[in-house]
Length: 245
Image (tube, rainbow, N blue to C red; front, top):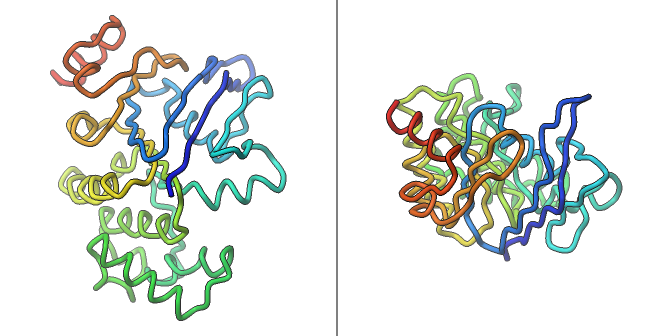
């Protein structure tokens, strides 16, 4: 089962700085959405508001399925349904790869150690690093660590996955292996929002591409709409700068 995510008039201020300016967005169950745009355009802030890693302003609302995302008892339920993969892996350095993946399901879903271990090994195989299960994060490459982080997010059986620039901290030769894993996930029917600066990947994987700038959704459409026929000058300028870089 995938999740339906809805943002209604979502704003976010840091003091006088307006990081998000009235975002309205409806993401259907099983949709894969890639969010592109210049640094500081609000992309990461937007997806961090979805599971309340950032508190959005009271004027707006975010729903995951029919649950309002807010502080309180709902939040635990929302976070159980919405997995997050960060730029910097955020693995526990003192735990083995296997234990990193087992931890959350055992703690929050009360899964037995034996079941959690079996599931974790299956997921590590799915992301192509089953043979690294007994190692520690520091013994793995950045690309391998990010694949562990993806397995850890999947261990909670989320209805939606949020990726915050999952390849930006990686060496160029490791980007492909992580994108390949995400590409395979995109075919499984889970709802996905991917903030990325990998334009080729967005073109290939997304059902919809969203271009953000200055805290606003400037343009959105199919990959061919946005990449081949951008309507807004800000989108055109951004793509010209990035694709001709």
